[in-house]
Length: 88
Image (cartoon, rainbow, N blue to C red):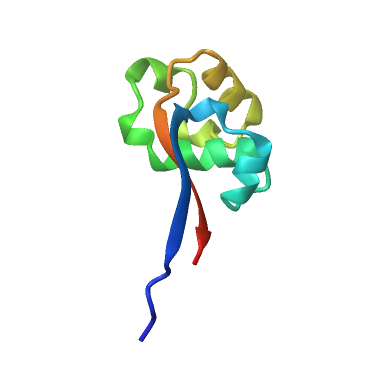
């Protein structure tokens, strides 16, 4: 039987999705910010607005320039909760 992981929360803050830094994206397990944003968008595709979807398509999400254009357009940049923690 697995034991639950115990953590100590260090900070909690709210920020815009596009404000994630390269270092934070790597802490999330991705090679860089672009890979993180592509994966986040694929997971949350259904919650994106029609206008935001017009900037890209599921088939083109792998294209870095499309991701940058979409995020730069600020059409889909939700607020997210950021939790920094350490294992206890």
